[in-house]
Image (cartoon, rainbow, N blue to C red; front, top):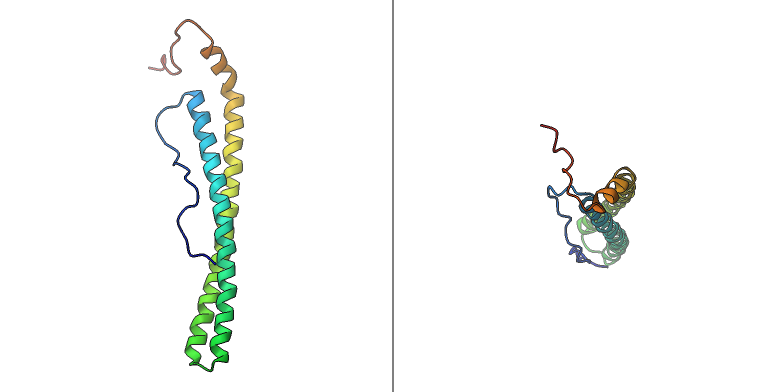
Length: 138
């Protein structure tokens, strides 16, 4: 059982800037995909911990009831257990959404590579300077 909500990895945030060069976009998509992969793992661990805490809290409610304490403490503890269980379900749903984002990120990276990779190879291997894309759009 853990109540540690601090991130477990040291993944730096993905920088959103106006650098739209091919290699920069590929690097950003790769970094986003890796950050989301880490988030999925952290959400899975959080969901397991919350589910374990909910189960433990149910046991505590039973112990309180068996100790013949005030019934309001049993009710409140059971409500906490139910809330933890519900939160664990929502964290699981969030994890599924994060996995979907991971898949879409890598799909976007592959599509970007398919559309612009050959053009970048051509532009990168030229000795002559050429206008940047959009230069003539004035």
